[in-house]
Picture 1 (cartoon, helix red, strand yellow):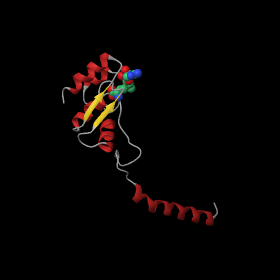
Picture 2: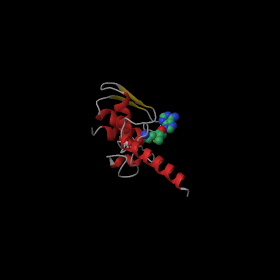
Picture 3: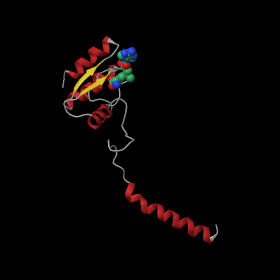
Picture 4: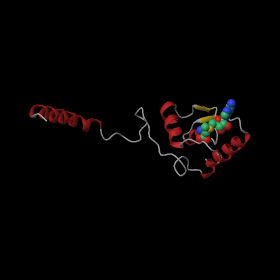
Length: 118
Ligand SMILES: C[S@@+](CC[C@H](N)C(=O)[O-])C[C@H]1O[C@@H](n2cnc3c(N)ncnc32)[C@H](O)[C@@H]1O
């Protein structure tokens, strides 16, 4: 590699590195960013084992971050596909009112029993 090119590359890399402290480390996870990261799967999604009776729950932390970001205490949270009731549970835990709807009576009963614990 030509010495001139090498110098230019070195300078570019150094310039780039000088920006890094401004942007790294990113708060992780953080509701203040556009991209949120969550651990998923059994043991991570829900603090209630029974939730896994539903085959497609989503992480309760995801529901909570949305609730805290977009609503205030006392607001009503609507989840028209509530499944095991993750959204309603996190709404209740964070002093919101909630309406959960699910086409399956079985999942409505499951959600009710989980939410009742809080
Ligand atoms: C991906 S799951 C939601 C899981 C939920 N977020 C949780 O954490 O448990 C989608 C739910 O939508 C329900 N569903 C599907 N079609 C529906 C409809 N037309 N009206 C109401 N609920 C429906 C299913 O029964 C299922 O429980």
